[in-house]
View (cartoon, rainbow over the protein chains, first blue to last red):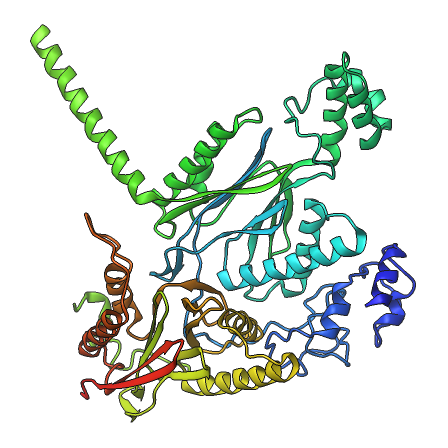
Length: 373
Length: 237
């Protein structure tokens, strides 16, 4: 819609046209912010089946009487609509998983198991839990699978619209913020989404050298790189051949602030954390033990995929609600690449075989010692 | 197995004797039983369901099939709460008509599946208590099965069982159609005759062990020629 795009390009978080757009709302409070989502929801309302909205304690809320059943994003807490007096569900929704994501010098690795369980029954042994959102962003999903699938879809749609309007991709941090704010109205309801957004930010794919030393040479390059933007450093790098090592560090320093691998955890409780390593789900404690001991920034791609695979494998070994296969995605400046889904059944047999061999070796050694002594 | 947990302090079984104050609340849901199954082959798809409608200890009807024909190439099987099944199929029929009138073509199986997912999620906080399975042919004429959970999470499968006997049928299908958990097995592609025979055998077994499944079996076979129906009697007890 043309008026929407002009609105957005006008910029500004507290655009003065905001209060005129949404009728029934008073002046701007500091907690209100401009979210284009409200317009989309007005056009195509997603009614989530909230019950008894009118009987809600109205003194607590600022109800938009024209659209009573919409999740109004821009309302400050408490919850915009009352938590439905939980209609007791006769069934349970799918839960339980192991997912992980971490960043290293060669990009981001996102891995997950594929078991979708429904209170004791495996509803699906081959469900995809790592969903690509756009060419440079994948998200791992944990929680109710329907919620995760739908919110990922909504996020992908919003990011695409952003890309079309602003002619650039939204950064991972921006996407995480968007998802977090979209989920905020549902805080307190039984919605359960815990996603790790793993992506690569950055607009130039032509600089494909891996960021080898993220923290290197800060003191010498501080002055030069702080003032420079991407454009000048990349041309400088191209122009001056003998100084290539010096300028690469400049590029590295400025690039790592704006672009590079990013891992951000978003949860339907409202939590949004930026970090380098996350594992989510019922099997996450087991995965963390493997990851914390083996992940470091300078690892190679093969090492990283092996560690991720091993972490998921160990988690499926110990956690009843994780299992079946491993999905692995690797995100680089060129986009995401999916590794072949691997069935862990073979891995168990290999493990058993190795164990058997070890036991046999130990027995042989013990016998040797006995005879020697 | 009768364990000590089933008995209260006064020695009486908890389920059948009064154990203390109980609060009753109106539940808008009921469970009407029934099993649905769908199998996709190279150029065909089969959707089968039993025809028993039950509630608690009673049988409401012996002739209430759970397959609903949506288009010439798609059949929907829904089991769970019959009231929600009826409303859901009405809504889907209306949406199909709307699509036909505005886009001048019938919806493809994949599109119906995506639409059903959003319809189901539209009631995320008061869900349709329905387990859906869509069977049909995709645009290239290959068989497609889409299985759903009550709130709209879905994916494309080769075979899926849903409903009251699903936990019994799914492992059997995994083994016979998916050739899982077997060693040294030759994976032959599934023919239509073999698939129909398998579906009949599987439902006969389900009727033996599940009280909510029985009476008759209705099979809808979807090929490029159209949809053919077969009715096979099952145990009536």
